[in-house]
Image 1 (cartoon, helix red, strand yellow):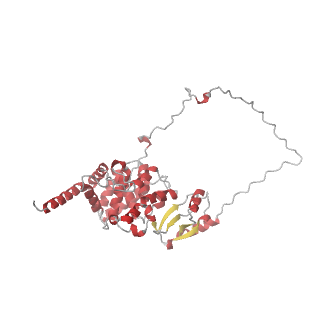
Image 2 (tube, rainbow, N blue to C red; image 1 turned 120 degrees about the vertical axis):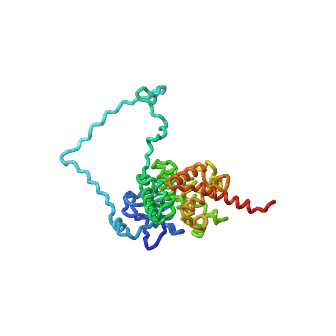
Image 3 (cartoon, one colour; image 1 turned 30 degrees about the vertical axis):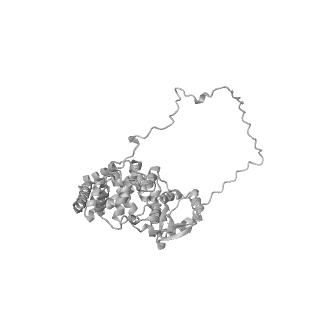
Amino acid sequence: MAKHHSEEFFSFDLDTLRAGEPVTFEVYLYLPLNEHVIRLIAPPDVIEGTFIERFKKKGIRQLHIRNQDHAKYVEYLKAKTIAPTPAAPSAPPASITPVPPPPSPKAPEVVPDPVAVDKSTEPSPSNTPPPEELPPPTLDDVIPFIPDIPPEVIFKDLLVGTPEDAAKATEHAGHMVKKILEDSNTSAAEAVANASYEHANSVAVYSVLFAMGIGVKDKSLLQDFVTASLAHDVGLSQCPPSVCKVPVLQHAGAQKNQYETHVARALQLVDELGFVVSSRARKIIEQHHEKFDGSGYPAHLEGFHISDHAQILGLAELIDSMNRGFYDGKKYTLNDSIALVCKIEKQTTFPVYFNPDIFKKVMLWIRKGSGLDFMAQAASVVDETRAQILDSKPAA
């Protein structure tokens, strides 16, 4: 999802699209509230009749194309499909009268015996019926994803590397995400995958790195992490900009309630636009703002009722939100964001955001790769704060 700039796009009539034919240009939907665009179709996608009708039913008559593809659109309009005219059947010579073929012999009518048993459904030694359910997939059915560069190396360079190392790590991470999406059946990922929407892409990178760091190798699961990351905040396009610009910790009252609708709006957009999203990715989107202590949204799930996958994406989302100032208005470095999350989780005896097992595994993976022990740092800070509070109390 990217910001819309009027000079980059032109609108066209939805009726000019032809069902059953591939397009040679990208087609976008414009969301006027926040001036964002979502890519709907890309070459060589074939236009389906249901695609056209779905938007017509919602009163949408205009879609958008980039100006750079204007010539392709004009050629598309010119290349109208002409159905071949069927050849007329040749008439028989006038001197010959065609003879109709003899009727096929009529098969003798069989009257079923009302008491006879249909033995075709009975199993026999040579015709054993298949089981009603397929066996669950085994490890042999899982297609592993093998990255070109180990995820701990990429994250280490992002965390403690030089600016040059971090730039290279960012490039490697982007390449890795694109490679994960190869052969993916999802269309939502492609629809919102845009380099200018940096938060979604960063969440995709962090969630994939964290997942691989704690042992996830299944490519289809990693694809779901990427898809969910890229689509997780698409519902914000339906919220007023005045709400979206306010840091999360400053939300209150009606503004807070309005902001929290973006999860349901994201799922609604995924459905209405016909994106192909797996049930697992959908669940990640639905639960990525739930908190372990039950104070999250939209369903206020708590504890182990929250998907582990959603918790991983939620951690990635929270860290990048802190990086960009979305959390409390201050932009943190990646190091400081992780340290702040650890501090929040250590301040109380019961975790606020995350399943402690998942959280600990990710932090141990970070420590192993970078040598930075954020959990120990957070514990030390919390202990010092408590000591200062106790020392400041007047003696009885």
